[in-house]
Length: 117
Image (tube, rainbow, N blue to C red; front, side, top):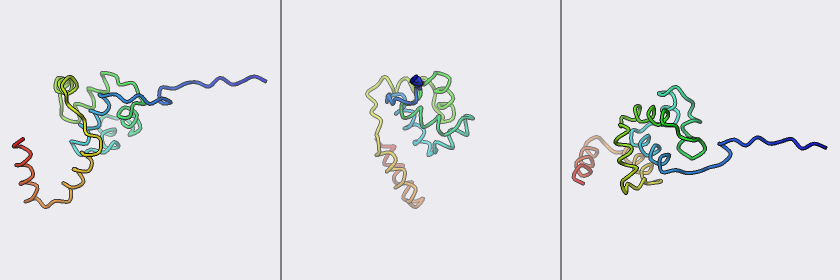
């Protein structure tokens, strides 16, 4: 009996990268869902998911497309990567949800506090 050879795909393995975590952070900082980000660059939300979660090799072209949609330059991206910038895992998502529930007057106060850091 012959065994069928199983083709290995890049998406079979998960290799988390700082670049992927940073792209997720930048997307969430703009309050974009994976689906919205995918639509804006003409790709599926699965591509965004795989890129952020280490199941897709990040190409410079994909990174540039995402940065353009998120409103960042490649230079800013590189600076964030090279510094001791730590990407929060769940804190950002939790904060965004809290901010969505605040009244506009309270948001202005929070904005002023954050700008003072």
